[in-house]
Image (cartoon, rainbow over all chains, first blue to last red; front, side, top):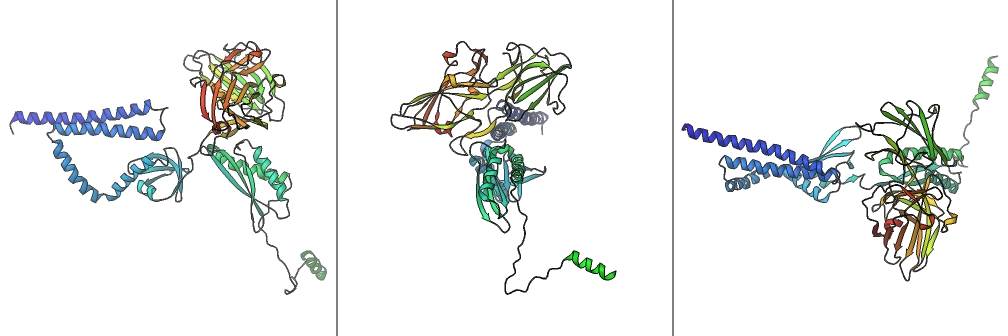
Length: 282
Length: 265
């Protein structure tokens, strides 16, 4: 190749690389600027989506300009992209499915960054929503990657969608206790608890005649962020209130009945037997 | 303001390494200037005790059961700090002891009181360094359902309709609440109302105590539409009241159109 042609090619390569590098920097800066400007105006979820969109759009523009500098025709590129997409589509069905599922998730918006999800046996906070997957951080600080396709197919629970939550405490009382009195004691404990919301009101219902107890359900509305502490403190308050009122919380026990078709139960008095043994030895 | 024992927006002149305390409602606030830092500590008495009211004064030492809560630095310029009283940062849901029923085109003025907040603010930049409620408020939810609505504070009130029946307390600000039933046919029953305290300013006069601007709720019992209009000052019959702190959400309009279920729950 003649020397001047070589130099022209070098210049093109240099300009193409320059386009891509500068494009990358500008795209990064623009996405960061967007995040900064939208700091108090948008949710973390929207900030993340917006900054990703800005970055990829700007970077693609500069990347294509770089390719144009090298003499690539855009129409050829688009044609090649069409053929390539079919090939890539066959080769990466799972990724494509995840990508499309991700777009559906973005449109449906069943959760945002910062929400707490329960998915199968895992519960964790959403720390990232990416094109192919979301990342959860569990409460023992483990990261879980969940493919977007899984989220579309399976049922998950968003624990932090609404600002208030209801705590349901099931408390058993002994069968010989006054149920109405126990209800009043539990409701009073809830009404005076600082973490219990005044409105919606707490309520207490009888749910079951269980094996060893009559079960009452005390339901108290609390601020979502205080759920864990509220549940623990309410349980303590209920135990204290029932203890103060002299109402028994029973442990599981079994009653044995002897009817006319059974033989009498043999009862041995241990102390008497020991005394008898001692007197014999003397 | 004798509870703070100094004119509004005047710097706290605390002696070095000397503990001071002031009390309002259930709160006792302790302060100590320690070089360039301001130490704060708080103690809340139980709700069933009578409200405290004590101006800022020197004390020998921090009580044994109280621990230093915060160390405040006012910034690179070491701005001076002052104490300001303020209204709540969220709306207050006032629950009437007895439901109030207004006939068609009826009108009533109720007086409700809500507890104050004690703020430590920088003088020049007016930044709130820290704040404490005079009484720890109970939280509540106001809205049509558990999905639609907002968190707010809650208080019970006798809501007297005569100014002479209003009991004035040092740690509470009174709001004159005018409720108008715009409906020509349906009566309006009010059990609770959400008071937008974050949009109101605090006023003080030696004779009348703490007040906020008056509010008018125009409600239509049939359509459920409500217009809330805040006036510029407390009721005229109180005489001259000095504004001692501006509304937290001062950008909000003084006229707000909303659905009745969002303020009555």
